[in-house]
Amino acid sequence: MNSSHVNKIELLGRIAEMKRIYSVIESSIKGSVCIVVTSGSQGEGKSTLSAGLAIAAAKRNDNRVLLVDFNWYAPILHQIFDVDMGDMVDGYTNGGPMEQVVRHTLINNLDLLPALKETMTERNEEFRHFPSSELLRKAKAEYDVVIVDTAAAFPTNYRMIDPIEISKSSDGVVLVTLTNVTPRQELKRACTAIETAGANILGIVANQWQNPIA
Ligand SMILES: Nc1ncnc2c1ncn2[C@@H]1O[C@H](COP(=O)(O)OP(=O)(O)O)[C@@H](O)[C@H]1O
Ligand SMILES: [Mg+2]
Image (cartoon, rainbow, N blue to C red; front, top):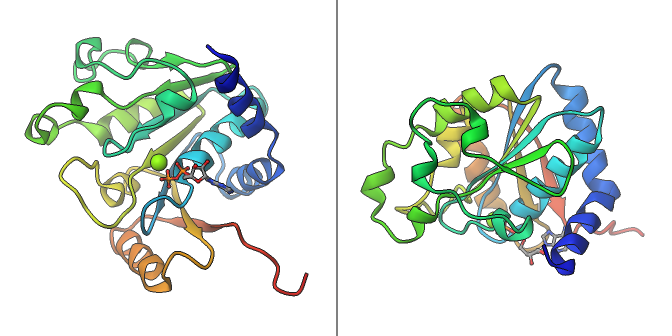
């Protein structure tokens, strides 16, 4: 692992806001927890937040934490943690233990389920029946905390694992928004879609928010 990856991971582990947001999650939900991170549109900070929350969780109380990259449209977590992408031959669909398919990271107690490399090259039909909800249920049984990075709720695309669908298998959803950039309507649309699916929105993280009276 080169030093820029190590620096980025260490930096993420030091951000106070990540620890604060994780504290809120921790006090909202007792017991083992599966959190989905999504947003109304792209580039709002989902992967950064997911990685930061997962590191904060792993450093707290010796939690066993799994970070999941279910943004197959633009996977990035394998790059941040400098591990190989997933490979279908590892046995994602054979019902075996998560150990077969996760990658250990530099952070103690933090494993990563990276995006599949096949999704970058092969037709999506191959993955239409990928058992993402089943995998999350298994992850929750084996880990104390599961943080799932996903695609933005909109626009939908052919390669995505639908964050709205995945939200239904979670204990709560954290929505990320970019202050003064994300249109209010897009955020509302995402909230409505998540709530209509019956999932629980824990809160909204406003990135780059500045106190107007400061
Ligand atoms: N809170 C933040 N403050 C400043 N820059 C951020 C913040 N969150 C993310 N970024 C930067 O914004 C870019 C997009 O972030 P990323 O987490 O990849 O977004 P997404 O997963 O929603 O596409 C990255 O370059 C990331 O480093
Ligand atoms: Mg991302």
